[in-house]
Length: 217
Image (cartoon, rainbow, N blue to C red):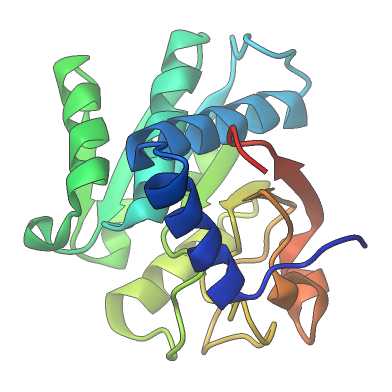
C-alpha cells in the first residue's frame, strides 16, 4: 500500500511545495491535469499523447479539483479527443487558478456548459469516458441538492469514470460516503493515495488507484 496521506498532510504538502519550494499552484495544477488526461487516454486503449476517437465528458467544480479537470480537458483536446466540459457551482465561487484554466478553454473555442439541474447532464451515457473533477479532498459534509443530482447522473450513465484525487462524495480522511459518492473505475491521485481511499467505502468507490507525479515529492 505504501505511504498514505491524511487530508491535513496533503494540504501541508501543497503549502510546502508553494511556499518553501516556490512552485506556483498553477504548475501543480498543470501537472495534475496532464496526468489525469494521460491516464484517461490509457484507460480506453490510447497511448500517451494520443486520444483520437475518445469522447469524454468532464464534470468540474469551482475549486482546484475542477481546475485539474479544465487542464485535463485542454490536454485531451490537443491529443485529439472530443471533449464536453460541464461546470457545477456559482461563477462567483470559481477560484483564480481554475478560472484561468477555464478561460484558456474558452479562448480555444471549447464550449462549456454551466449545470443548473440534473437535466443539463442528459447524454452523459454517449461518452466513451467520464471524468469526475467535482470535489477534492476538502469535502466533509453530506452531498445534497444539485451536487447529489450530478453525482447520481455520473453513476447512472454506466460509463467508465476517472475521478480526480478522490471520488466526489467520498470523505478523503475516513473513506465514508457523504450521502452519495461517485463510483470510479480509476482514481488518479497525486503524490500519494489519500487515507480514505483504503478505508470503509473507499476501495469500492475508488476502483484502481493511480498515483501521478506533479513535479515534487
